[in-house]
Length: 317
Image (cartoon, rainbow, N blue to C red; front, side):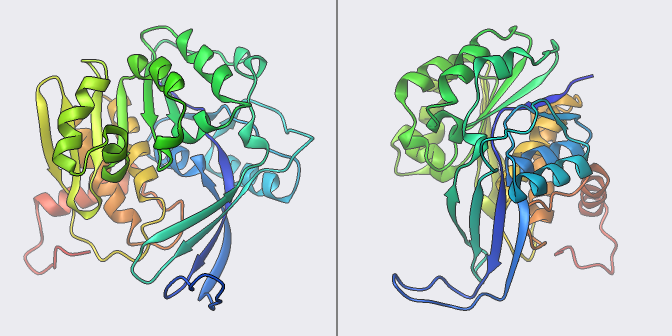
């Protein structure tokens, strides 16, 4: 059975909701504040909840944040391949969500920022596994090269996905040159795609992305409530989003990526997988918190409701 091997970083989010960010040097009162496992945990939870067994290949630290991260992964059934790092705690991200549902992050990296060749050598990879690579991993000098060498050694049957993240412009071009030819899936939002292709428009990014990726690579570009664009060797296609009342966009992109991969692993076509990912992301933004991905049953229920709406029901969630 296929598995997701997640090579990114699990950190802890301090999630706070507020009306709007204060000006520089100012102050404001938050409506709520909660600690949650975040970062790569959101993708893994989404995949696990949608039927794809998931392993975390990254490090996790000694301390209160490491404890919280492990509790969350254990609760989801996510397997950790490495022991506790005794030298550092897991890192922290302050996630600020405004009333508009826009979110802002401030991160401090901990044990998860390092990974060695020996760490990865102990991982048993199966031919039908799905490997997830985060752009954040390529920004850590204590992790990037070991990770790239390991990916280069993987059998061609292993599916490799890449989410470049918002700091894609800061990734060493040499590392991208090593990674891109190996990709089977690119998944990003429109801003990241435009930054990567130096495009001022989404249309420009969609036209330029294929030239940087292998011909067989499936490209997913998320466009918020508008849904996403999928591109392959047959061209680009828009997959409409679902109308919902958004209260918190934190984790929506991670949900989309995790459900997309889980759906592909389950045998869905790229179009079907993108539809399921759009539905899952729509459900996610109706809930407060960073790891609010629905399970497969909830995605199925929404798709059935859209296909066969009850005449007395409002199709807006």
